[in-house]
Picture 1 (cartoon, helix red, strand yellow):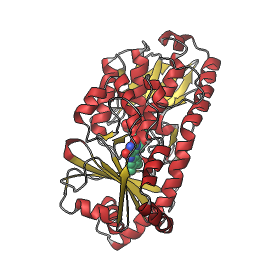
Picture 2 (cartoon, helix red, strand yellow; picture 1 turned 30 degrees about the vertical axis):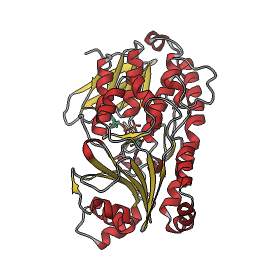
Picture 3 (tube, protein in one colour; picture 1 turned 45 degrees about the horizontal axis):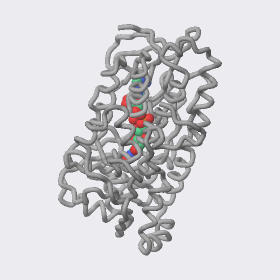
Picture 4 (cartoon, helix red, strand yellow; picture 1 turned 90 degrees about the vertical axis):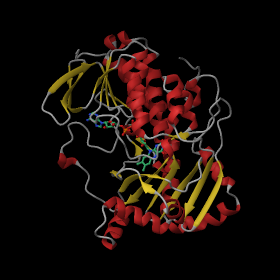
Length: 421
Ligand SMILES: Cc1cc2nc3c(=O)[nH]c(=O)nc-3n(C[C@H](O)[C@H](O)[C@H](O)COP(=O)(O)OP(=O)(O)OC[C@H]3O[C@@H](n4cnc5c(N)ncnc54)[C@H](O)[C@@H]3O)c2cc1C
């Protein structure tokens, strides 16, 4: 296999696979490196907002997505304490597919990565990028076969980091990891068969010390995914010391949320609970001083209360590819000077902030309200009287935008004056 490429992409979640598809389709030589074997499950609520559906079509996986995804998500809910409120989810203004749907990450990520491979991207899997350095004008990545000793070096002028934000970076030293804090948010996901949840309803779960969501996804399975503060989990584990962390967290959630208790009363666990975290909400660095680009969670991460992370992963990758492809085919990467790449990086970062910063801030506000029972207590009577406010919140959270002709326009690039493809 060749070891020199136009671009190396680290990580094959939705962000990395989107980059690999678009660059490979435009004729770039692309290596995409993923440490885990696929299909792999992942902590995620797995709701894919309607704004992504045209993008999935443009990426060549829309039909396969629709074949297996769960029912259209037409209602949003709020489950807090003993209360359950629901309201319509707004649809996209136009287009054949106007509501989002849920699909397990073992399916979505595999579909996207297979598509990248079919377009010629070279997939290194399961390989882990352990170390990176500059080699003249090139980025050099040292890979180790996951679980084995084999190593290889790949080089490219363009390096795109899409390795998420929940695991240590390549080259990270154990000593540089942040110490545990009570406010850290740990994330869990479980899947159930025969849960009592209305098809097409997407309830947000608000409880003391955490928040989450629940949805009927593919193959009739219900996904529950939530975040809980480390101190709330610690207190719960002290009460139920024989439980795993995931089951203690679920106990805490159920004791604070009747909607979840009811939904799981006759359900059977379909798979092992998964855990991840602490998650790292906030704006990170879409463009880095070492001359690399970041997409997806690594560029910036919204609290997952609004379920916009996959959207931001795919859409940030789209935004970056637009910037890179504006300059031409793969041969551009080979002749681009570091100064040119830096200009593209700074432009991408500016547009990234225009596009996503407000979503990140809005998600932070919602997350902090949801985790505080007193705030939820104040808001609850208002929402009970006017459940339509939930619809407005979903709209404000970027769940739908005007749906014009080009897939690029499904998310607004505030700086872009003319849409190019
Ligand atoms: C509880 C919870 C619920 C959520 N619910 C939703 C939801 O309903 N809807 C939604 O849109 N979003 C949701 N999200 C957010 C969503 O999961 C993330 O935003 C999304 O996965 C980010 O995609 P990504 O491609 O940036 O990174 P990831 O999906 O994390 O992919 C990164 C990939 O990089 C690989 N990798 C890491 N390091 C290396 C390395 N050194 N070498 C090679 N490969 C590497 C990893 O194995 C991984 O496959 C939720 C998150 C949480 C925590």
